[in-house]
Picture (cartoon, helix red, strand yellow):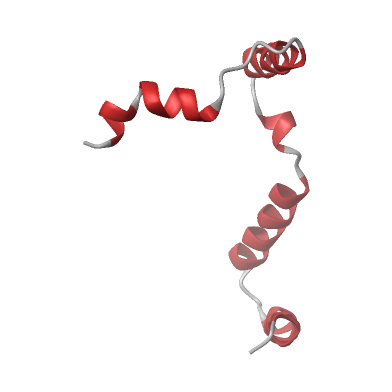
Length: 77
């Protein structure tokens, strides 16, 4: 079944739901979908992300290949 048909099937089903807890679950899911992950992280996490971006802008990065080579011994376990 394609996604549009699935969505229509859900809409039909939802119009017949009478259980308040099911409706509340869908409302909670909708609200969660609308939230930006940035709003859900701590100020410390935001500061760390900003610092990481600033380091990248300054060219203070380590190539992926180099990191993988350095930590290869832990990856094989």
